[in-house]
Image (tube, rainbow, N blue to C red; front, side, top):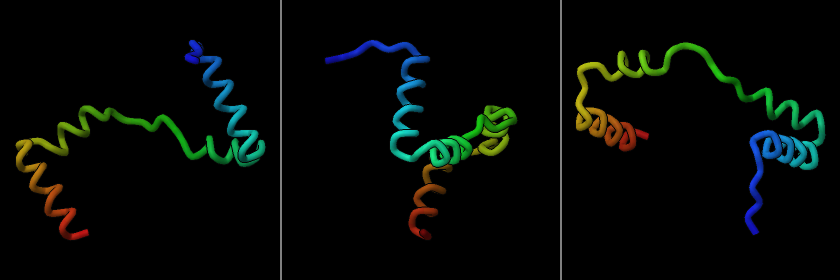
Amino acid sequence: MTVNRNQIEIQREGLDALVQRLGRAGAIRFLQLFNKGSGDYTKERDALFEGLSVDDIADAIVRNREIN
C-alpha cells in the first residue's frame, strides 16, 4: 500500500524512527552530524575542474582507484 505523505509528515515519522531506534540523545547526536554547509558548490566545482575534460577526470578516477 502506498501512502502519500507530505514533507512534514515524512520528517515527523523519520524523527520518531530515530528516537525509537537511538533514543532521544542518540537521535540528537545523529542529526548533529549533518549540516547544510556553506559556499558556492558550483563555483568551487568549476574552479576544481577548470581546463579538464571528462576523459581527464575519468583517468584520474581510474588512477586513484589503482592506488587505493
